[in-house]
Image (cartoon, rainbow, N blue to C red; front, top):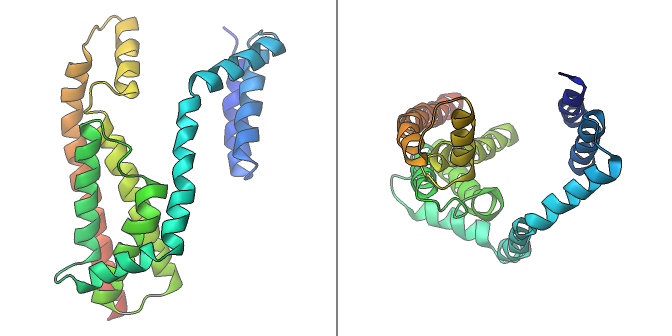
Length: 223
């Protein structure tokens, strides 16, 4: 067995670490992996083109970006902040924990595209969390504001990652099933989905605790 094709992984790691163009890094890694595996360069390019053509519907999601831009231009973030400021008892911790639960539950039902960074976190969740923190803790430094935005983005990631595996028709479940089956452990997608539930619960409790602890730290820092 030749380990040279694994050089593509190193290319990805080094390219991202040096902050090169992600598209060029991925394409370069794919070409290097294919050539080092003994494939003809034309065959590698054909495989890349076929993969893009077969999955071209994924690029449809970029259509939503101009819509989000227009909504932000006409005050979507300001309205989101105003809604939070008018709510009694709204805190950053409670808001993000509620979004975490929403993201996990909808992802578990297969509706993983309801949330997301461009369509939910940036225009709604992050501004609302920031407004809730300011309402409770007072004015915040630029660093604290960035931490709140990062926590909002992380909340979306955790909710999606650990929620989607509960949905038995997701690609990751089918991939896991194939790996187990090739190793001699046949399992149905439903069995794998059921065993993903305890992990999702643990992820909710752990990240929910991190959110609430972060909210408390913000309060102590302002005292």
